[in-house]
Length: 99
View 1 (cartoon, rainbow, N blue to C red):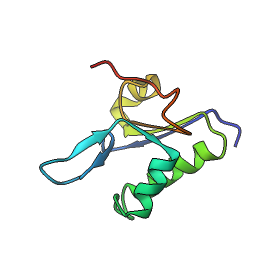
View 2: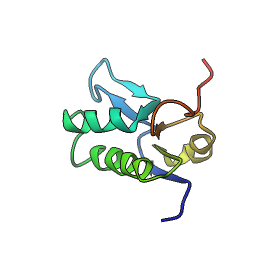
View 3: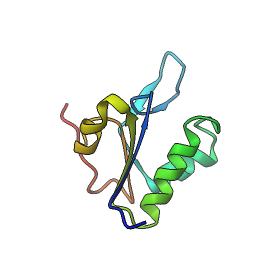
View 4: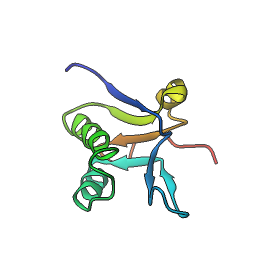
């Protein structure tokens, strides 16, 4: 596929750390390595977020410039880097978020 980016739209606004617990928090950026480590550790459900995380990591590892996961209604903000979870080969060059 000759594409710069991959956008996976969902009913969830980002990938979460500790999903479904009182301590859940959105993950704003993931490197390919961090995504692979999280998948190996079973951090995301196999029938839910894991396939999306895997697809994004594989896309970027295969030469894509970026991949992101977020909510359908936030698609424009995700592309601009102000919403969702962004994936890159490393954290360098991923969009930064305003505080």
